[in-house]
Length: 135
Image 1 (cartoon, rainbow, N blue to C red):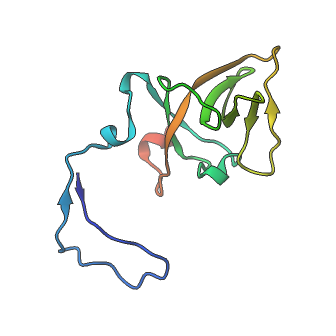
Image 2 (tube, rainbow, N blue to C red; image 1 turned 90 degrees about the horizontal axis):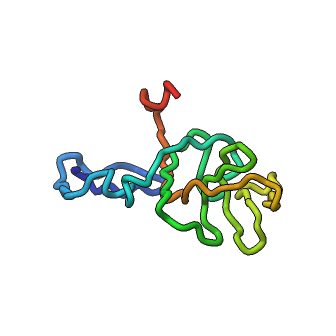
């Protein structure tokens, strides 16, 4: 992958010349984004409940099933038959949103609950991907 080092700041007045020297990295996006390929799946975020941690509607979530969820992790879980993306509070057994408009949800013994994986990365597409348009 070739990377052109461009620093973008608020109040941009211009960019470095495209002819400027660039660096080549011996790295693929797969290597950068996926730690455990055989235990990783991709999901799409829906809604605005996680926006304050930078996950917005339509973002691509990279979810690692190999990782053990720790208190405060962003997870994907099956909660009573519905897939949810929330922050896990393991001490209080709560599912937390990062948007103040949503209340915490308690995980009771009678609930069907399983953690499907830990969200390790999220990707925002600034133009809709043809691959995602079909979903």
